[in-house]
Image (tube, rainbow, N blue to C red):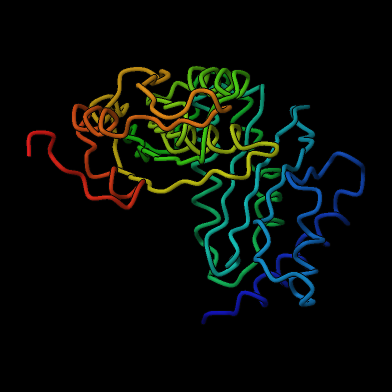
Length: 292
């Protein structure tokens, strides 16, 4: 069964009401856009024509035993609960392997819900009931089995488009986040701005959430490629590190930031990294060989 956009948004507002009643203290539920719920209400009332941004927020959970905190990042697609909810739990007390396994378990649990079922509250309850073991086992948390089974992970590559990337502080943030999360790829600065990030799905999604927060609006993920793997994903990488890509620019340098990056050079860069097919996805232009 499908539902209209309005019905989905009404269900999302209902779930947010429940969450605010469960977490009434200031700061427990942090909306990425403080006007998000107001804008959705205006849209439903007909006083706003444009579709409002998705609801994105972080809930800080207090786990009693052991005494730790988990930040649960939540993104509700417009068609949720008929589309999959995007969730990511993190804690400073977890190493990357534990965090990976925690989110794998959470995602697997949420996957048991039928389309149309609200599941944020259930996700919170699952974390409160099941997260302790991930903290108590400080080395590795193994899935219960008589024999160790290979853990399947999703290797993800995201192609992100922005109208421009100029500011030094933003460029530094992108590079810092990329290196901290052990992802590879590049950030092409200028106009347009293009970012490619690849690595385990959880790391790429955290990168995507972090660089957008709190107010980078004119940015979108144009394309994503995912592959299931039992290894560390190193053989799937097209890039060996996460670096800034600086190409020649053309235009009137007399006007502030009024120049475009050399897309011909960018196409050649993509060819070298076996990604020529992405050029048309990003720009709507069919790539042509430079010798034709």
